[in-house]
Picture 1: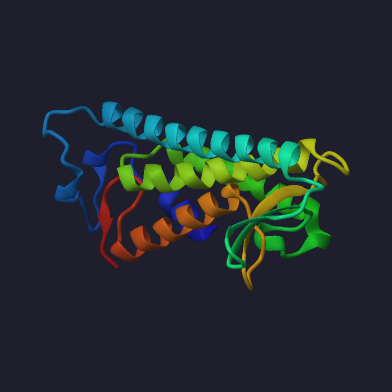
Picture 2 (picture 1 turned 90 degrees about the horizontal axis):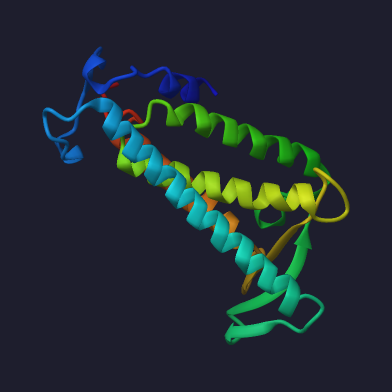
Length: 199
């Protein structure tokens, strides 16, 4: 959380950034463009990506429950990749089934942190990464709240089953992709406000 608080505490406007930070040339922003306009566009990208990821996950789970649950698995690439409907009470990829309520709280906390980060968002790559995280977290949180056995204890619908690997869903994929992108951005030193920090 300390790293998240450091990032959240970035200046409201990119021009106010200092203390070893500099704006990357790759942003491609005209010199006279207001920071608020830039921020609004990045937030729009974040929510567009999140909405797309969430909708894709929700629709795929509705199809799986209607057409695949209680039916034999569908082979996509022989034994290497199948679509097989299962209900997962654990975290991503089936881990920690005894902690469903805790994972629900973690997902809700992730959404709150992303909402706070959005206020200081001026980086397009960060907008995409956070959008993927938000869409994935919302997708699995929807299952936790609305699916059996009960509110905040619902089992997530998983269906992508690679050989010798855990079964997962599109929300899990979005979360992992968003997380990988955040790690790469952090290694590059790019913060959500579009500045590059020098350690």
